[in-house]
Length: 515
RNA sequence: GCCGGUGUAGCUCAGCUGGUAGAGCACCUGAUUUGUAAUCAGUAGGUCGCGGGUUCGAAUCCCGCCGCCGGCCCCA
Image (cartoon, rainbow, N blue to C red; front, top):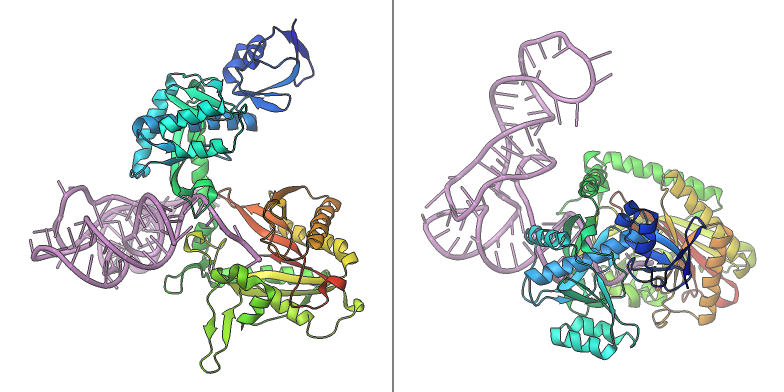
């Protein structure tokens, strides 16, 4: 009995039972077989040399497919791990996934410290192992056996990972002398990896938890051809030339001074002129959309932020309260404009006729960002938000939300941001204790954002756990010259507003921020 | 904040195992007038991030701080 394999072009071919994706590739052409990294079988990416499960649809994945690339990089992480184990015996391994550009492996080297002086040695070892064309052997392992293996090896990280897995779903992959707990899939053998580079080393907390041990994260990238690695490195150099920090200096737009403080940009005349132009452009756009400008001071009583809930959540990340010389009052540098705008809203009785009320301000705020987080103008300790708070009736929310989306898109397009992503940021599915406001309001708000984004025809991704503590968000992420993602515009629905009474009965608010 | 790097003239960088600093470009001066990023010559320019320490002597070694770079955590 033969199995029927449906290929992407719709053609159906017959193969013997137990045939692999690689067999299919060979039957098409030797050249294709040399380039197959993995295969998508009925929507599941699998090893190319694993027997096909029966009748199926099949796509052969190569370097030109995102999943094929990911397979090569994932296998490269294993290759790097093998090299590291050979060079630094006793190393313990965390996780080693493929990423957007390459892969990393989190390792625990004990007392050994690795620096960029060690990269060449690791690369050489990888090259040597790769040239041996070691095949990746997949093996299903019982949980008890798996635990026994890593106990013997003394790798507590793998043991912890095993705790989360069930018997029957555990697989090991082995290439050469290195065996790893791994779901796969992997490339047929290490010979597909022709060019490799260890890019950088960094600390990374085990399981992303800053309370847990910090492991050494080694980043690397590999290619099926040396030429592609060379081209990639040239591309990186080109990207560096377009780094806004470099351009800002070269064009005399802004500077930083150690004497002023880290993360506090100083706008030079040309930069200030550019900034002014941008602000005027945005103010005009806001005016056309029915916004009114307000202005609020740079400091406020600490109690304002205690009431709003910001202090409890972000007090540690703010510049600390300062005393007045005589009356013992506590003031804080303004870390966000929201409570101020709420006070403006609450400054007199409002009626339905006032709504929607759209308050806008180019408000300068100050936040104590961790020193390691500062980055040019993208992450600073003092910055001016194009901030607005919209107060409206619940039945006006959707329309208002869509109008804010339009405004954000207008700005992004005017600034030539073509590759932005819209991200719906919702609550953490597991931990709801991080959020204020009633569950009912949250459910309604989250749905409203999803609906509004859909109605605007916006293509969105959904991220759980990315919401603000007071409400879900629609975030607009852009990329810098180096490919890093930054949140620019963000629209949020506030589920509750402690400083405004009767909130639930008749008002909802949104804030739109374009930084 | 954490991990790994790094901090020398306006910019890009050299300075090996310690003996009071150099190059290219830019600037300025002079020559050249040759058509689309850098012609020739010369002048000038630095508390070697800051503060301690070791030493007869430190940019070079040690300690502490600060900044910057790449990540991690975080991002109201």
